[in-house]
Amino acid sequence: MMGLLEVVDLTVEFPTRRGVLRALDRVSFSIDTGEVLGVVGESGAGKSLTGAAIVGLLERPGRIASGEIRLDGQRIDNLEAEPLRRIRGRRIGTIFQDPLTTLNPLYTIGRQLTETMQTHLRLSGNQARDRAIGWLERVGIPAAAQRFGAYPHEFSGGQRQRVVIALALCAEPALVIADEPTTALDVSVQAQIITLLKDLTRDHGTAVMLVTHDMGVIAETADRVAVMYAGRIAEIGPVAAVVRHPAHPYTEGLMASIPALEHRVDRLRQIDGAMPRLDAIPTGCRFHPRCPHAFDRCLAQRPELLPAGATQAACWLHADG
Ligand code: SF4
Image (cartoon, rainbow, N blue to C red; front, side):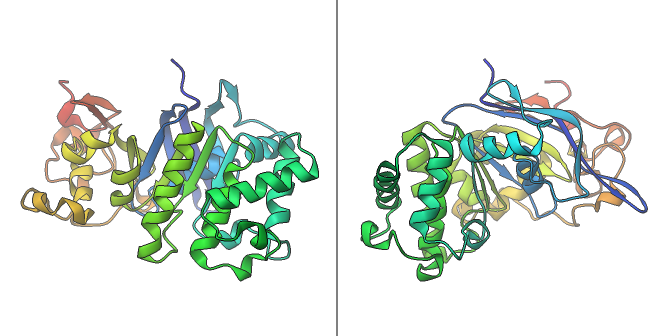
């Protein structure tokens, strides 16, 4: 069965004066209706770039060099700006780290919600207003009817992110791309926002691509997880399998960053070294300079995703299945 979102061999490049930098290199994955796919990796691994490419918001001069992105079977990677903008509002909702990049400071939140709904759904002014208040209630804004006329700066950071979630979901999109939705918030508010996002998307059968550097958030929220390293997917699979039995040496090291897994600490180790820069990607497996298991083949040949227990890992250790 086809996924709701299909990303096939997505390659994103940045032309520079010193040559073309390949920031995403043949990234493939899918997300089904109602599924939460976590995308995790260090900063610069390509996870936010993947989200930006899907919604057509790659920063110039970045461009999709090859590959396809399909939503419900329709290609969306080659659309003109206007049809893509419509899809972005109607079929794909977005939640970014800083609510202030999404909310317009000059308009009341009520106006922003009703305009979004009326752009994408057939609703009268009164219907849109009722629904907007309903959404504010659902995302936990107290006294929603009174706050309808308030401006973004009149809300706390956590409440603003709740409003952004309402804004992302109010046009009933099939897919939500949430990029570090809780990173800018107080720790005490983070769990509430994640729970809210999870509950609402589950109730509405919305697919979610949750981009974060925080494996703890993924472990709590996602059904499956894609681990990215230096512009490629290192491992992808059901979240429980990836957390408990990571198949890629990089994932194994990454698991050390989940405090909740303290009981496994004896088996974990921090990974020495740093992710390579885009202009200095190693040959073969791009993780090989940091990998404690690297052998000859790793330096010469690039591994594609291979079945590895319940997950798939781009690692030659799994070459024999
Ligand atoms: Fe390590 Fe080789 Fe596997 Fe890469 S392919 S992760 S270098 S063992």
